[in-house]
Length: 190
Image 1 (cartoon, one colour):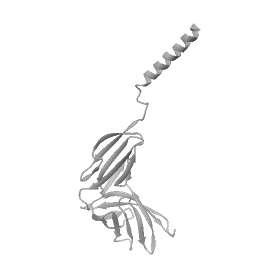
Image 2 (tube, one colour; image 1 turned 180 degrees about the vertical axis):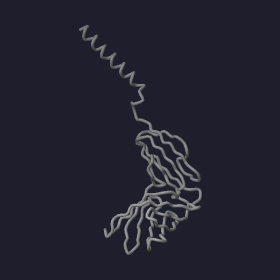
Image 3 (cartoon, rainbow, N blue to C red; image 1 turned 135 degrees about the vertical axis):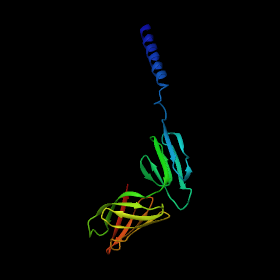
Image 4 (cartoon, rainbow, N blue to C red; image 1 turned 180 degrees about the horizontal axis):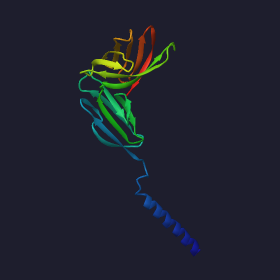
């Protein structure tokens, strides 16, 4: 009987030791994740610039705009482009960067023909200009033209590639194209 009592006491002591040693462990309970927000330039919104801590699976609403309503913002979440307004679900550490969209620079374009009459075209386009809303472009096929942004609409009109014109959404950098009695879709990425 005494042996059995000692065994039970030993098991209880061991159990309490394990429980007490783990009670200080950060891995018990609901983990916290960090949200780091950086607002660059002339943008506003919530959450503001800072570092925040949220519980796992907590939903964080975000919304950003440019201070000048002629411009649009891009929201970069862990390196991927997201909409200017939405929700983040905290299941990992998240880094958000928000800035006014500036398409100037080089982009990789892909044109897909709607009727498969011609092969898909892939090329680079370099946008330039003194304004965030209008300028000129050249592509790696030696074509050129002008670009204009109106709200979230991007229009690219070629001046030396027959009658080619691309229209699309600035936030997604996708849209449609037409030229030479053909049409299709386009997408672009940096």
